[in-house]
Image (tube, rainbow, N blue to C red):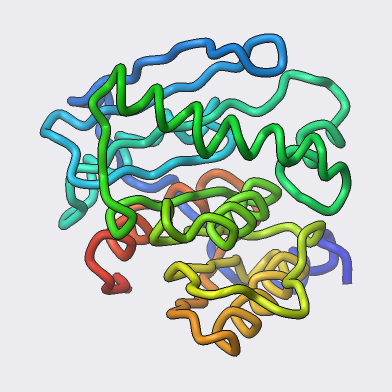
Length: 245
């Protein structure tokens, strides 16, 4: 079933509404261009109170702007968002190759080093963002969720939680998952069955390997309103371990 057919099969399901957010935000967003791949922008949302936790995110050109959703949500600890912008290469495979180890391992590993080491060094040295692994999450949506899964599995000492929304299918669970594994929150929408299948595949593999996994399918489609609505729940879970309804 393609996505058009699936949307038609859910015509009675109400559309996902834009989630509440604070605008203008009480916190601030700062950015820098770091010397990777000819210059790559990293943007960080800093909450108005000292950050108790940090989320490192793919597609930072979008997700670093989501601080207002955290500010509007009840019970979410003060959390910084450090977002690494996607490549500006017009070839979509350039972005996908950075996010999935399957296609171009050399390019993926270069981006991995930048994301895991250089970006964290900048956040620590310039912004004072320091958090232990159990207060540090890696987040992504769609192809970015593949990066979150890959980096979380490869660096459990850095990221205590993986937050993956609507993961793509380029990176799939390997036959053997190493341990220890981060806690993982997977979510997909009822109107994106292919992505829901990818999320379920990961949830099963991680659970079978002994990981603490949450897998949810909520009313929604593949896009920003769905992901923005779930984002505060995912961050709260990463910090506290409970799942909001």
